[in-house]
Image (cartoon, rainbow, N blue to C red):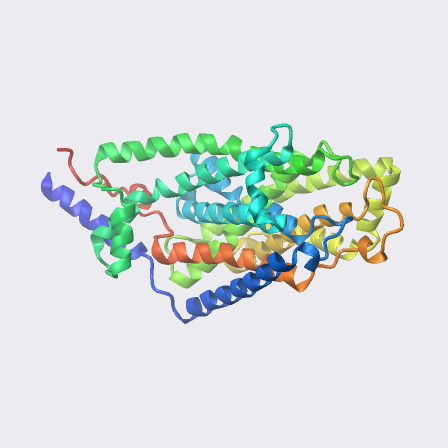
Length: 445
């Protein structure tokens, strides 16, 4: 019996060595330096904004929200991927999801963390954040959003960390990466893990509970975010369709983000045996389904007000369809939603490289889609302001706004990159269970 446990433990250690985080190569170093430079430029711009105020932005009485809020909605949307891959696919017993769960969870935690930071940036006066807690009113959708974002961040972090504990312990045991800091980090975060059956039972139970909890919270965070817009009278936002519209778009964006991350991680760390072409094929099919659902809600979102053409809605829709934002609007619809459906519906289109290129289109299109949700509506206020400068009737983000926006995106990417460098991005013990390797190789005393 003891020899059997020893053999299984050796198999487990071999798999751990195979999936241990690797040092950055030349490409990885260039990538990290690039992200740090972008973040540094963004910090300089933010310090300038703190000293001068939001006047350095192009946000005015008309366009009081700009690319900061577009970024916030984008981050909130992409964070839904954690519940999509980790929770929904787990509860539906989709076994092929195992190599993708941690990728999805890291994206979700990084995105929702920077969504919160983006709101602080948009406030102009970060010290006033405390007023949300001192003077917050439960009648306000902003308070709803604060509560649900915080809850989602906590659950997403737990869903990432709890399944990671056994892998951290395995990395600690192998000693493959013996740097001083890695030893300290692994020892601290492994929480005295011994690999016992009772411990694995608790991990499985915790994951099941969190997987159930995160789904309504995830749907809630995107619904409540949509209510920030839909509870107003503004043309373009005054919609009963907004909740489902936001949720379906977030599912689509999340699937695209996972495909992009899958491709880059697999290529950088030579993980073709774990992230296979079959995973790209299945994720491609899933993205087609989610794109079709999102296409339906897009048609519903624009067809109904276009049919009625009330005065305010008419101005807003004309601006999108044929006016100032028409090129961006139709490009987003075609390249960010329609083209992915036609490419990914074929088997060749679901191969790793074309699927990656399509996912990049989906991600870029999704960001500009959020910009189109925020900005054009603000430029057509319900009660127009009289005798204002013409510059107030348009919105062109300043270099400070772009720098800060890119810095938050780079910050989320850097957070994911550091995680991948320190911790195994493919779940070791779950992969071992799939291969029939016994993971609870320590007998209870």
